[in-house]
Image 1 (cartoon, rainbow, N blue to C red):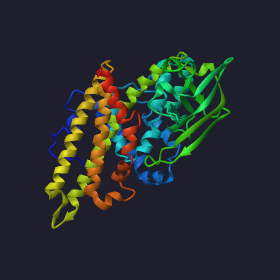
Image 2: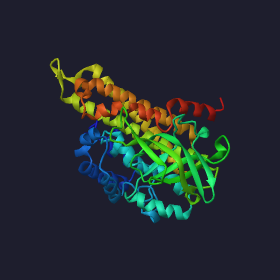
Image 3: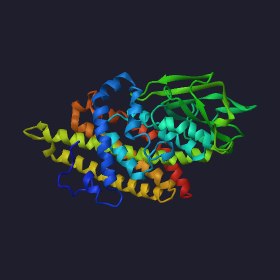
Image 4: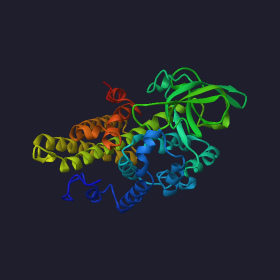
Length: 395
C-alpha cells in the first residue's frame, strides 16, 4: 500500500518508526520477508478463498517454512524467539490481506499452543509443538460454550476421571479453526463450581465421540469456524495441560496475550482502510475536482489518522510493558476497546469515501467493514473489557 503521508517524517509512516527504540533493522527485514510471502502466496488468491469459505491446508506448511508460525516460540520446538514488536509488524503486514478470516485461522495456534508451552509436561510439549510450528498440524483453542463466552468460570463441559482417562461430555461454540484442527486445547470442568474446578485438556480430532459442525458467519468467511461436541470422549490423563483444577489462570494469561494481538490487528486493519480510501480519493473526480480536495473528505482522513496514531502509541506502550514483565490487565483491556473502536470508525469512514465501490465484494474495505463486530467481540467483548477495567480500579 502507498504511504498515507509522503514527507517521511510522520509517525504514521513505517519507515519513520525504525528511528524509535522499539524497532530495529531486524524488524525491517522481517517486514520485507513477510510482505514478499504474503504478496506471493496469499494476495492473488484472497477473493477466491473468501468465496470458497476456506484456504488450502498447505498454506500452513508454507507459513511454517517462512518462519511465520514459529515466530515468538522456543528454538527447541522449531520456533524463533522474538520481542513483542515483531508481532506488531506481523499484524500490520497480515492486515494488508484485508481478510481477517485468513489471519485468524492461519495463526490459530497462537491461542491454542501457548497454554501447552506454559504449563504442559515436557513430553506433551515435544509431542505437539514441533509439528504445529512447522505447519504439519493445526492447533485450536476451545473455551467458549453455547451458554456463554467470557464467563469462563462457569463453563459446563465436564471431564470425569475414569481410571487413566477422562470422559469428556459437553460442547463448545464459535471455535476458530474448529473444523480442520488436529489438536484442541479444551477448557473442561474437572472439579466443583467456579474457577477452581477448571482444567485444560489436549484433545485430538480423531477421538471417538468428538464431532464438529461448520458455522457460517457475517465475516471471516475464509476461516473455518465450528461448534464442537463431546459425547463420552475418552482422553488420557497424560493429555492434561498443567495441574488438574488449575486451568483458569492459564486461560486468563492467554486472554491477555490474545487481546494485545487483537488490538494490533484491529489498528492495522484501520490503517488499511485509511490507505485504500486515501488512494481512491486522490484519483476519484467529483464536481470537477479530486474527492480528496473536498474539505469534508480531508477531515475524515485527519480524524482517521489521529485515532490510528493514538492507538498505535498506546499499543506500543502496552507491548513494551508486557515485554518488561508487567501484566497491565486494565490497560490491555482498554487498549482492545480503543483499537476495535478505531477499526470501526475507520472502516465506516472509508466505506463512505469509497461509496458504491466500497460496497462491492472483493474490496478490502468491504471485507474489513464486515469484520468489525467479530473484533469487538472476540477475546472479550467491549462491555466485558470495560467491566474488567472497572474491577481493576476497584470501583
